[in-house]
Image (cartoon, rainbow, N blue to C red; front, side, top):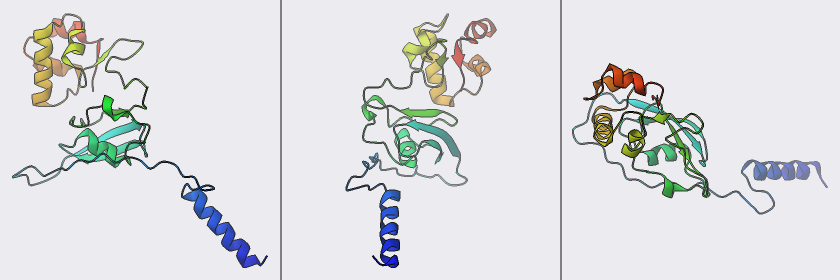
Length: 184
């Protein structure tokens, strides 16, 4: 065999391995999440950039940057798309992206990222449902609803002390909640 044939054969093998093809097989392609995003009417000026950590069953886990108003589906697309084994039915792909948060794409059969942390029982207040918020000490359904509405209207809480801005939460209620919530 001629040396140039060996080099050409070696290059072909290197290209096949680098592209994920190995003896006729290749890994499954990531599945893009389709969304048609139209710019908000009348928006102009500077763009606010959000940074989130996308992990789990995505092609390129890690930090992604998105424009303000982006949805979870866009974060998955920026992370290379969901892998075929991803369980997208357990996620709200239309949920607005919150700066500084983590989006975990679960594998089918795996529990999605919990709002209540295993082991310590604290609640991620910026991702919690009204039911989750109601599980906090001293929080009933009415106050849980106020917290959720305040968060939805004013954006995510940056610090536990931001809960003082919610009508019905004073210093003593905040003291009772301080060790039970995680912000952001």
